[in-house]
Image 1 (cartoon, rainbow, N blue to C red):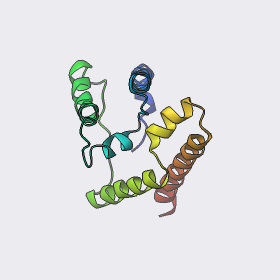
Image 2 (image 1 turned 120 degrees about the vertical axis):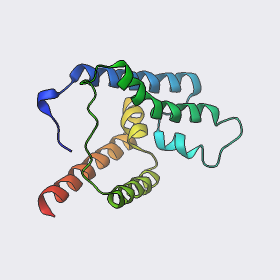
Image 3 (image 1 turned 135 degrees about the vertical axis):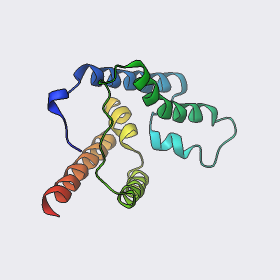
Length: 145
């Protein structure tokens, strides 16, 4: 995937960031919970009585939001990402991300958005690790292999 700098959309990106920040803040204010996607999904497996409705609604919102965005925004505002990888590579990558989130005690949304906003040193170290690993992986795959 490459960044199309000629069609960079800072306003759309800003709006998405604001919505994510508002969602994280509201979830924390009203329930005391951290907006960590992995933790929210993990709470659905196995379901716990009385704790699944909000989790299911949140995950449903993750799935439905892009569809609503495509419907509300003009045709050229949303460009679907182009993924240049096969299904086996994507499956292995997903499993590695899952292992990493368990090992790192959280995901990029939990540490990178909520943890950093709470000035958590642990989240800062985790986020720096996520980013460094991502940069290194892309460099190795694109320039070494």
